[in-house]
Amino acid sequence: MKVLLTGAFGNIGESTIMALLERKHEILCFDLKTKKNKKVRKKLVKLGSFETIWGDISNQTILIEIVKGRECIIHLAGIIPPTSEKFPDLTHRVNVEGTQNIVEAALKMEKRPKFIFTSSISTHGPRMHEPPPRKANEKLNPTDNYTHSKVEAEAVVKKSGLIWTILRLTGAPPLKISLDLDVYLFNMPMDQRVEFVHTRDVGVAIANSVTANTDNKVLLIGGGEKCQMLNREYFTRILEAIGIGMLPESAFKVPKNDMDWYYTDWMDTSEAQELLQFQNLTFEDYLEELKKNLGIMGKFAKLFRSYAQKKLLKSSPYYIQQ
Image (tube, rainbow, N blue to C red; front, side, top):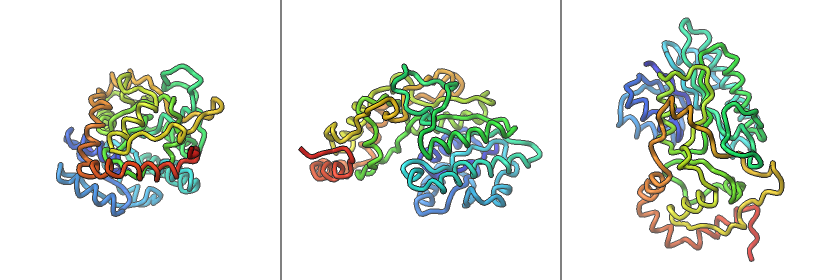
């Protein structure tokens, strides 16, 4: 099948390309021409053949050209936190107006393609005061620039008249993590419910959506019950895997009310798994890959563990040195 993939060279895009290549689809990748994206593309072309067009999702002229002849559009391009919270206008232009642009381009085609849109479980908002798991048919509760933009974009897709599928993803961390972790992570309380999913499994879910019977469905994409845990376990094991070791719990946010929790949770992925058959890798698999990818850097991290911890703690808005 002829597939257009926007946002092709990000973390999820890379996994999606790999899964699409395995399924022998004809792939056209669309993304911004940056140093990082060119590096990812150079690595991926060794795995198989695909076409690439560089451009901006706000350029309606180029969008009309790239959708031509495509039987399926997978729309991954978007601004995510923390960038989304620093630049609200850019976030709306890319996440909402960009989605509208590519939908309008698809509507001009004689034979309209299937439209697969990736959203986020964060659109459900903080729900720790409610029993899990989260379900796809719940009322959404956006709370910041990012989640508002995703809810608006979902509405654009649903009202488009195209055959659509919306995949709300849980967090799928990359297989290489910088030792300079983002301070955004300190906002997730230790007792927060977290569901992990392997980035490669997300790629499989998206690629399988191309031909699966997912028409006009909203599906939750997470790792399943075996990948559900509290942030205390999740973050501790990642920090240990990359050699830094766990930080004092006082560095993390302590919620004061129901809306003070983070917007992630355990999910009901039963329908998604039945249709897409994507839950293949575990949290343990991910941790082993993290260690392997760090290589000698992991050893250096352990040598400079104390320094790395102190540097991170200085970035925490909650930590008060005893």
